[in-house]
Amino acid sequence: MGKGLRLITGFTLAAMLAGCSATIEERTSEGIKEAGEVFADPARNANTEVGNASFYKPFGFEVQEGSDEQNIVLEKGGNTYVLFINPNEGKDSRLFYDLLYADPAKEILQTGTFERHDKFGFAGATAVSGERVELVAGSGGRKITTLSEEGDIKKNLKAMMEIVRSVDFEDGAVATD
Image (cartoon, rainbow, N blue to C red; front, side):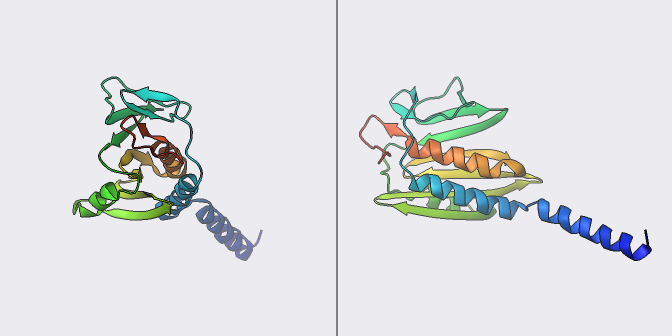
């Protein structure tokens, strides 16, 4: 093989490898788009209850001991997800979204907002370190966060939005359609 052909083959291989590895920004953008699609769909049916709160718990997620109806800790595959429920906030609340931007210590990588009928939602990522980011998804007075590996951003944001969209609190603040 000639030197020129080896050089072209090397550049082609490098370009293909670079094209296969998406950046954190690209993965976050894909995850936010996925979360927006989940937000636009009807909410999943609740299959789990903690106190006055009921919500959809995707397969493989487990509710951890010590959870209460306003702070529910979920775990899946060694990853921890924290679901916050503020029953005083309606389904159109922007509180958690506004609080995200009010924290000067947060280095926000990207966020997206969604509105459907009288509901407000958002999803996004903030920088933590290395290949990990903090993900957040919210719908009205419900928010869920986790630390995520770069490769899991899309599936995590999808599952997180499924969870927050499904939350129902016995006080009548229903997040379903």
